[in-house]
Image 1 (cartoon, rainbow over the protein chains, first blue to last red):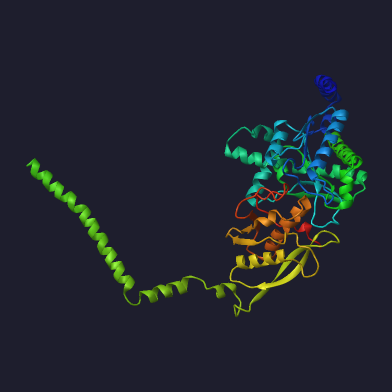
Image 2 (tube, chains in turn blue, cyan; image 1 turned 90 degrees about the vertical axis):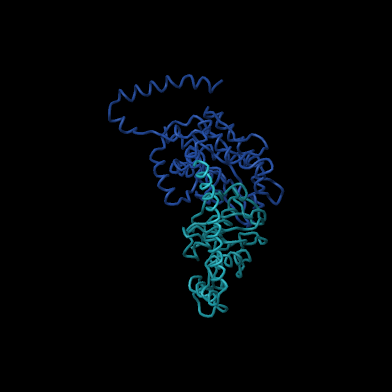
Length: 263
Length: 207
């Protein structure tokens, strides 16, 4: 109910804002040049699920269960405090392909995509939190195409239609995230800062990697590795309700800062 | 008149395939004679010698049996969970692809200085193919995708240990595609995209 009244009030607020800017004159308008599109919808992606368990902890905890718990907590926070629409790529223990995760984001016209994971390493000592955004791994030919997409990202929404069978469209669809790399990097930075402030885990910083789930997402997108499930100390934390809530709160604070900066 | 004409035409039509068959038989006979006559075998041998590079020559070393070269492998260290360089001697030649297969086998075998291989110990290197465009295709056995605790960090370390080892040591290699058991696999454990070629990433390597 609350979010519906918000939505009804929105056109009126926007009209007032536009009028105010027009009245304030050209100086103010120059200062507000090219604002990013307002975020209306957030898609939360709890990593893995179903038969695909993700990393396994020595104490028996599974990555898929922890990512879902954190994801549901984050959903509740966003809905309660921001009144934005939130969609989950999964809200129970089921398999979802990487393509479908991206498609859920794009079909709901997501403004932000947050993939939640728990890390794993062959070394039990490995520990800490980190936030990833997509790396391109691009060849020269791809780089040229990406440069084009980056300069024309406003066109992208209309150019990409998941229902089309057209080969070129499918290539663009496949590479959608490349138009949002800079914004994704900024989002990663803000979320990682909050994770570092709230979790007390080692800060592994922001990194770029060619993660499959991010490549097709047509909006700013990050993948959060909350802590290492392969490290027994961190596995215990990840399995605790209190730590899961802190991870959700940290991601929430980071994305609030990102949304406010874009307004 | 008309009947005569038709008969002549018929004779001509019959003789055309006969001529073609006769011609083919003649060509075949000449080929057989040439093939079995003395000296041709020698000529073929000389042709092969001149045009097919010998393994020892392609290797570029003196004394092919004893030749070896030093490659740099990448292993994980417990202290910082970064990849660390380790030198290893492998047999040289005959081709870069052969050397690349040996280097990756050593990567699986593990460190001689107490570091950790990011690849599962049972992984077998099935084949490395290096294309003229600088794309190396690495085919690893199924154990590569089965043998370790999945997680982003584990996947990144495994993938980039392979990619960095190939690009760092073998000049013709610019990009690397990884196959598992001869087929494309989307990811190892749900994270790193294996369907695209990798450029090296030395940010995972300790300085």
